[in-house]
Amino acid sequence: MNLQVRYFASIREALGLSSEMVESHARDVAGLLNELRARGGAYAEVLAEGRPVRVAVNQVMATPSTPVAAGAEVGFFPPVTGG
Image (tube, rainbow, N blue to C red):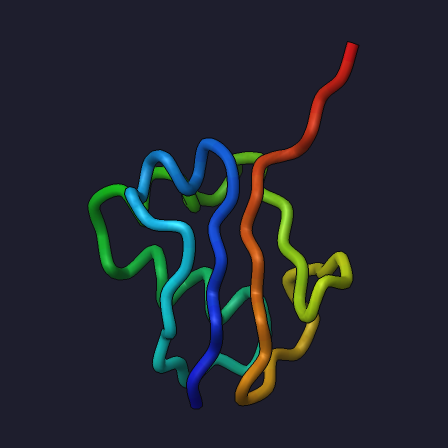
């Protein structure tokens, strides 16, 4: 299935792109994260387990178990801090 994946802030900077179409076989956010990490390089580094990364599916905050379906928009962004 095809997913529209968007990257924001420091994740976008590390990967050098703001969005891409991804062919995925993942059923949920955790599966998609594993597929992206398997690409290695910057993907493995910035999306590594334990790194603070927020995820939204179709503009709704998601958890690792949130399902993804064909045509979904998945956004990855760092946590926002304020002062």
